[in-house]
Length: 196
Length: 191
Image (cartoon, rainbow over all chains, first blue to last red; front, top):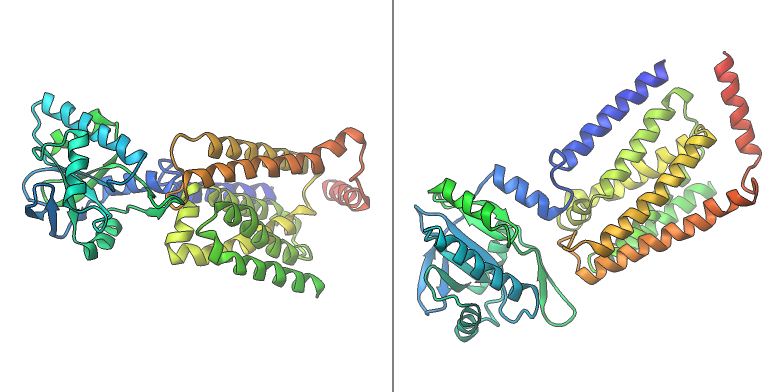
């Protein structure tokens, strides 16, 4: 009897530990954890200077409206190109519903991605600058941005990178408040609508 | 004494692999993790565990192992120093040691179940890591994730050869120790 009680108590504690370690059974991967945790605890985004593809400098994020962004690098042969296409589809999805939300593809490789690279990436994916533009931060701001948005960038073996790509949402208070799958158009739309 | 030296050696091997684990999940999960668990189990083999603590001890080992099977724990162990230290503490002391300490009290049916469960879990992980449409760990490349998946499958095959095949050829692995345990269990039930 004693043994059964001990074992059952241990099993209950064990379930609690696993519940805790998976954010209540919602996240078994680090990317899942990021999405769950950010939605619950938005993080303030300090002002950053971004150079957009028309060559202008913007202090960012602008307050008072939601902003969508994703991190990219323009020399990426695979997933960024797909996600560039996804971002274009997202733009069309939102403008069709009458939502005019600023969208940024932000390069985390500003050394390689100078103005011409940003422009040709924008051209290739049909980003006209309004509402979607391609931008780069200053080189020494990259590490802080990746850390803040919990983006892990690792070099692949062909001179490029792999990273956890997602559509990131900044709320009107200037807080990083959501991370979504690049094709979760409906979820992103309802998140944006809830912020307007 | 010799067990302590062997445990120390296994732990040192695990420590020496640390600079490599950021690059290669196969070394991380299929070399460093087993070395740490082995280090703990070498210490736990001689542990005299009271019978009534067998269940909780086994649960501790299985829960700790389950948490370390989550892909996010691998990422955390690479990105967060607290998790990195936790890995070196919990894999030996919360998985290896309790598993070895409880094992001599575990009956043959439960042993068989745990072995079968380990094999099926490895095959499941192998399938997951080779077929997942996205990256499971932010810190590892897709190719490496798939190599790890294959590694799980190879390990499962090795365990099948070691644990399952002999079952079909009679009780090769049955030894005196198992019989002793059966006898002691009967005594406890009789009391």
